[in-house]
Image (cartoon, rainbow, N blue to C red):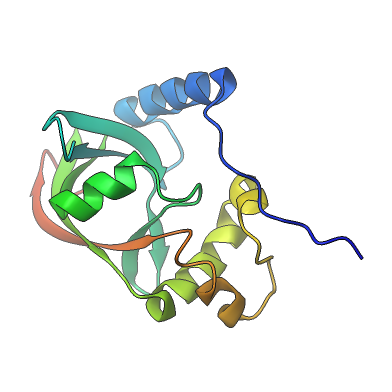
Length: 156
């Protein structure tokens, strides 16, 4: 049997174009409702960086998952601890708290079911026990999202 190892994320031209398209759709409020724009101050530059990302709803809470591993947005979230979430004209300030592997595991298991495009970046597969996803948590950080302030409507 051949072991399948998770792919490494690479920012390709197609991914960059896709991010621009989905960012525009989220800005207009016409993207699927689970996508938002996450804006976080850069840990070194102090410049706000914005990415399109899935706002995962699980167990009556909101989460951000790093499906492609520890990327700049994760490092910035760890340093800042807060961000702005936008969708259309609505925005809200949020607190981001990175959670333990035990807390992250069921969120990651649910995430790979809902976001099939990211499955190749995980070693654990849909249907694997939650413990398999607990082992993934170090490579795929999970942040709990808590509202701080809402503006421009009733939230993202």
